[in-house]
Image (cartoon, rainbow, N blue to C red; front, side):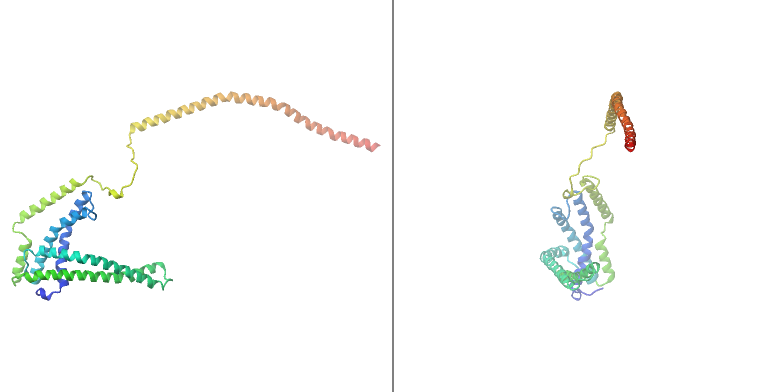
Length: 313
């Protein structure tokens, strides 16, 4: 067990209260996010984000109240005020309104400055291969940026711990006996009427499930409006229409084949007549062509006879 609040640093006390409070609220916020998604609103966009933040207020107050009372009782042996959760919540909201913009701009500046310094250093080592260059660059700018972000987070925990310490100063000292502390802790966590609590939890769970299915427009996931694309709608398949179209195509094919056959049958006599005429015209030509070689055969004999007569003379 730790000592009183004065012996604990503000960072440690802030972490002891903020960390369990955060994880107590996460499951309930996830349920709200699922309901918003079922309603068609993204929890990271407006107006879904506004609804999530508004519905998270009672969850955060309840989680901070329970976490503060538990830490005070277990670590500090103090009885926290009844309004400790509400007081810590609104003071933490003021802190976030001032500190988170600083964290955003300072953290972004640290990252950009680290990247520029890493790029300047790597200009002197241009011969490094690409894979090793990427790893070295990531280490060069990632290390200082991570350290800067951790320091900023520690600063937020410090200021949040100061807020918690103010509530510890208003708390009443508890019983020093460990058994009484455990009893108070159990009574704080477990209600006296346990069946009523179980019934209430079951009823709320059933209500949320019914609400989820009521908000969902369809039973399958659908894309967001910004991601929808113009997709041509596929027509519904109808067997009767398909059979009728097939029969029409077959009938057209049969008619086409029949017309081609009739055309071929009508053109065949004309082809035979044209072939006969072509044969009659070609026969005289063949005779003349056959006569030409005979003339060519006679001419050598005449030349031979003339040669003999010349020899006689």
